[in-house]
Length: 318
Image (cartoon, rainbow, N blue to C red; front, side, top):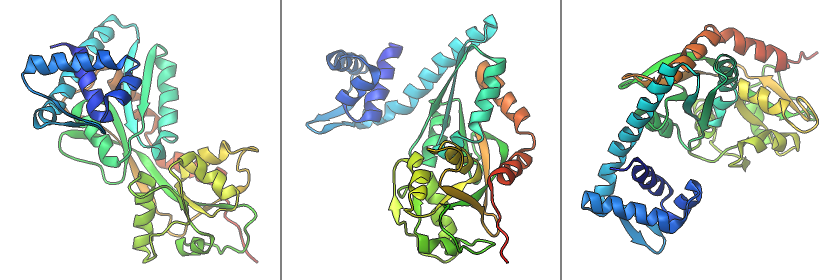
């Protein structure tokens, strides 16, 4: 069985279309269709139901997805072992996490890792849902994943990387907000957040529900990078993990914190961030990445506190 055929099969299964899969793989669609047909002929079963609006997996195709991912992971493990034995430092680490944790803590880990393994290549994938992170790690699509909240169990091992406080991001021109600031105090401004089903929205909705407040957004945007500019433009207020808020405001047009203010919330709602991986082992390079993460975040509570001190602004009222 050709490894490339399995890669093509998974690409079509994930894209739901030969056209989209061919574009992602940067190959001609007829070549992709031919390769999948060869795989179907070899297995003696149709893997896709082909229709005018895309393709769907047949029962045989659904049965092949997990074994195909495991097989490709085995190929990657074999290649990683050879690269590790040669001690060149080259290879690839595949990390999956949503944008909430991609800026902090992941950016610092990648930076530190590249200092000690400059030949390594890091690939970071952004999933739609938290469950996609866990599935990608379980299946071998990703070596490591970052998740917030309660750590998973079962076949996945976990490493705590610190806690992140949830903070409010408000327009700088807005005055009259109380201190300490409660979630309910933000509702008159309107909330700017991401659509239902996304990681940020899950955290925001859970916080609103816990406070007995309606789970409503004034502005929904699928572009997380647009949240802070929308707040700066006066569209509303946002709730973000402190590390992400600090990173997004630093990158706002006009310089650090341009047009917005980061305020701590009463009770400091907090989320734990965990690195996850399969218990049955990691490629050498990914294992080194894990060790760097452990070393860098031995006490991440102190790091989160420093960020909050530098960027938070607790205003004292007369």
